[in-house]
Image (tube, rainbow, N blue to C red; front, top):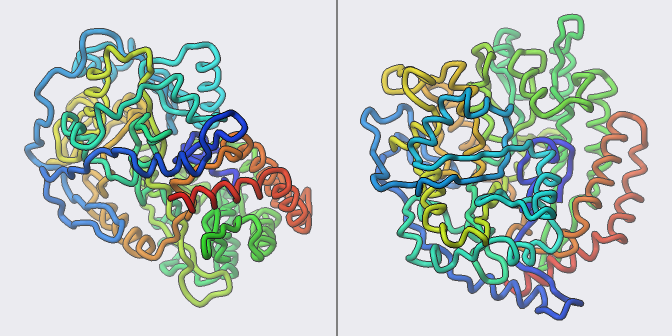
Length: 536
């Protein structure tokens, strides 16, 4: 369930297939029930987890916080020695949250990537807001490529049965050891790839770095003498009013952080669960208060006035150039802000939510451990080993020579070394944004090249708010109604939320709209999730 517009614009998960994927209800079509499917998936032969231990972190992460590295190893490990490609083209369709990079004829990184892989990579990319339609068009036209990010679709398990390759014999149990860097991906992420009891994809793991927090320009706030986090909503409002200066093209917020405010009012992470019974966060008694608090930020002109017509990249640009001092984004966005092409150097940090009325911290909503999933086309079964070798290459972990190339390109062309740390130049910042991290990736480290303070700041922020975070209790559960209708049902409430925040509708319109959501499918989604939970 999506609670706000930022998830539609900025979260790959919001645009893809991870509304809780684990079982399929086939009732009415002569198939098995959702409960039976859930049981089959629970019994699936998941890949063995074999963590990579080739590089010792400077600080070992715990309680969900990632491993910390203050510098790149001086002698990166050569992780892959055997050929990857087979000399034939590899076609992919995926997502990018960054501007589309230059084409292969003008992109030296892409050219070097082709050479390293040993196959011509024909990479097609789309932004998250466009990807669902792009995916549906490819499915309808029978034009899915060799490897594809799985988009949102009704009857997703059946679609994957028809279009994707069953990878169980190649990856299940100890078979994954043939692809050791896929084996380095945690079990929780692999659960999202199982449909009808079979491994139908590889996961794009994220863990806690998919958790959203309120970023702030720590350099600019320090110049204003602000060093402490506001302790309540009113204090946050007062600070935003102090910092906003439209005459200087400066607003407090890039867009209205409705979900951050919801967390301040201790609204659950999508659903709450008690005694096996789910309740939607849409129904929470504090929703009107959170909406009114959000509306007030926009009405009092503390948010960039173009927020509701802008794209996700605009929010990032405003934050980077200092015309917005707060933005709501995921931990995974931290490195990207530091490496944006053409952006000046700046300092940032992040706050988790505090209780709206004061009195301490509020639990942050933990992100999905899996960002998205990637499948291999069933028609490419004769090349499955090659395609899995390519995905294994994309999962090579921090500290390896392959990771260094994949993230930073070619030394002297895309980056220079500062000590042992690769520092991207503008060419590197542009050309390396190939969306590879949305095909599959290694578990993310906490690392800011050449910037020990930024690395420490990321670790401190995660350590302060992640251990007490609140997970979505429906992750790993599948609702066919949500798969079929969930996006449209949520869009109706998201649109109403936008109207309320912009003053076009009243806060009092929220409660009847939620009742309408429940009657048109929300209650059925709840019932299916509860049945899946009982079958677990």
